[in-house]
Length: 121
Image (cartoon, rainbow, N blue to C red; front, side, top):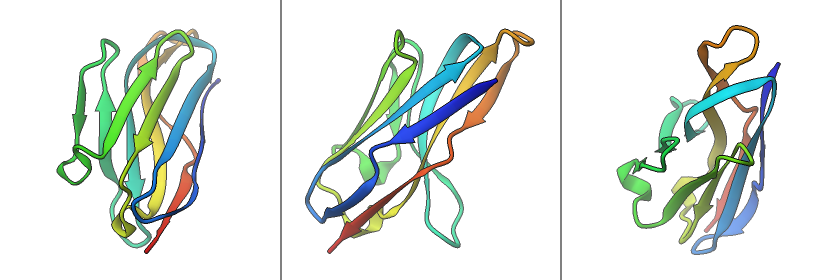
């Protein structure tokens, strides 16, 4: 069984910084892309940033130059460093990863349960 567990959410003032982490655990054979998404109530979940196993990154335009995604493959963990936070960054942030387990050696998309980030203005 594969799990993704996020941590690091909370309340921060506008202009401040916050770091998120997401650790994968379980019967993991191999990992591919990892990503962070976010969702505001009543709106669609959107991709914030993604990173390949080799470290190539991409970001949605609204967070470029403010957010940094990184990963530690040995720890099976992805990070999101968020700087200069704005009120519009308030959302539930979800970790996602493409993981092949020892059950079937097939890559599947897994989601974490989410962590709330609230930016006060």
